[in-house]
Image (tube, rainbow over all chains, first blue to last red; front, side):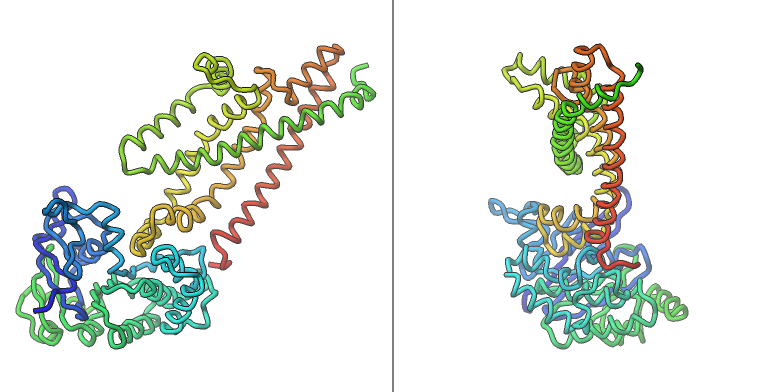
Length: 258
Length: 225
């Protein structure tokens, strides 16, 4: 097997006495699209946040593209990564948040240029071209100079996707990216993600409540329950013929509501 | 005669010259306070324990002692340690330190009000801590606290007469000298009071303009939400 793009090796995360993720093992192949579903509190968002290095892990190691992410080599052994090391390896990963988290004092264009200029060292001209190209791709070529407050939620989320892509990550994380949107705006964001999946070589992990989208888009669905993967497999299998009782209960509850 | 207009015209040029010193002390002191306050506020947010504790301790110490004592300390006690400062410099530093501590609390409130998501987005984009502060956090943290900072500017301005205690020739000291020369205190002291009143009102109006400007350009450039 080729080197997995993302590998969780026995990863545990807890807040005090509360264990959010319990000895998680998960391997994701390059280019694979993985949907993470599960009830709230099951640890699914934590998976993304640890991978983005927004949360420190308590035990285990996360690898990205064969290189340790949470740890670094020092005198032949793995020690927890320091901030400098994190800044070097974090660039492989991009994240889109539930609440967009755009920079409100910058135009759509500037949002997409800030990191390429200051982190990748692009010239202003190169950054402008790349940002314009990406905003075109997400269908916002005509909104380049608008500020977040002038955009709808769906448009803001598409800017956020363009902003993350501007950093050329190998892995893209989507954390409930349509949950804060009005229903009529969900489609435009999912369409952009769909296009990314077909037109770009990207490994994608998404935490989602859009079961229809997960079924159609993902190569694999992981059902999280109580900090563990309770069941995983091809979307057809998980959605039409789940083995676990908990998966069945969750799906019927979600589908009933949705 | 209780009020002598001729005397007023006679001393006005002298007082106006002294007011330049008052304004200089105010602006330099506040510049120091504004910069130092921001530095202290950022240090207090440090994840390194001793840095944030030291910054917090410094702020508490300065805020809990009278500014007059700080002025005296810098002017009269520092020379014992070989640091001899002109009166004006000692006064400006004392006012800057004192109000810098107050400003740091204001900045801290502003910094803490920036949503966590902004920090997380900055991390996700791999921005360095310096760029995160400079381009993302500070432009959002400062506009909301400009009115509070402005209050401290006016407060510092009104405390500059304390510098007369170390013989800085600012307005108050000049008024006292004029009074003692002519034995007429009514006019100089009244004029000084009037000057402070007018300048405070002007400063307050300026701060309101600045606040509106910052809100337009930095915080919410797009306008409506």
